[in-house]
Image (cartoon, rainbow, N blue to C red; front, side, top):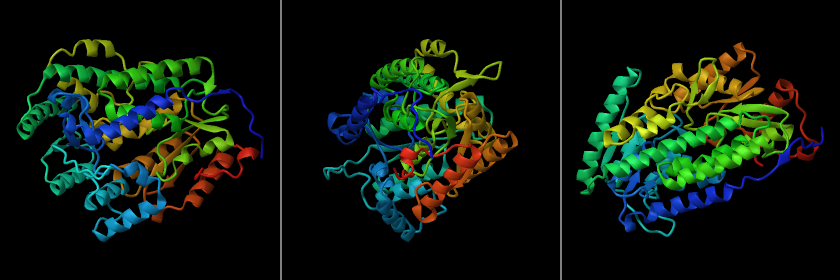
Length: 448
């Protein structure tokens, strides 16, 4: 065992309190939006948030099928209860573990019930069909709650330009459909404004992620996952742009002055996911001095571009794109561009959920962010993610990148042994990276 030796200045993130404030406000607003005359939309992993601003306000509600999912996924007893319930309803391990928690809350009647016990029925359900299981969940939720279902889909595996045209046509149809559902008029100017905010939010967040290339990294992976929340819930608002402008300035200062979240950085890691009941597992490597600095989830929705020398930079042409959005058609085309393979290194676009477009993504990210090793996962309830994890490991092995791959259903503790996972991490960090656990933290585990 070795003592923790501080290498760099350690400082909390000043923007953290604002992130928490915005997150609390958004959750509260979801239950109050209809009373204020705004839309309430049922959706998961909602993309194109700016689209619905045209119906009067960016402060509409985005209601989840499982509004209490975050709390449930960190409570092992509650997870067990919910999964036993969905098993009894015929939804077993072949269904995505995350979606089973959503289904449980839907079937228990919690989807439309606020913390105060008030019932809020969404105006309609909306979904981008990037994942068959998520789309099926929303379809079932719409049926269960008796509301219309609106969705769009790309031409998976086809010509990207034709797929974008197809998406734009569907967006026009979706707007007309919601006009009939709600009886509301649509304001293209509000769409244009919100689309610019959404694109700027993603651009600012990408710059923040790029700053983590610095040695030492100004943020750790756990920080980044939390700091993505504002973008996830309200990227189409001025409040989101203002938040990420402030955060970008703060992270620039941290990078320039070697200020970190940990105080040390003996090794740098890429980590693509974590078992959701154990968020502290993203920081467990720090007990050995290794810091997660990049990853699929920490960099969610960030957009980078590979330039002539092979390096990744935040995508170019942003100012020209923003200045070119003047009409409703411009805005819808920009949304289609962003979500249908605008850049191949944006893995979370609709088009890039193909395995052939994703396996190089984490390898390149690990190289670009100067990572010494990779922690990869393969989830047996998601065929694509399973293939993604296994194939990424194969490439990492071939290139001599130290790595470990663990198998998990991210929410189902009945098929996951946390002690075995921690031992696997210990073996990787000691044998794979040659690290020794800090004496001061020898009793610390993935549970915190």
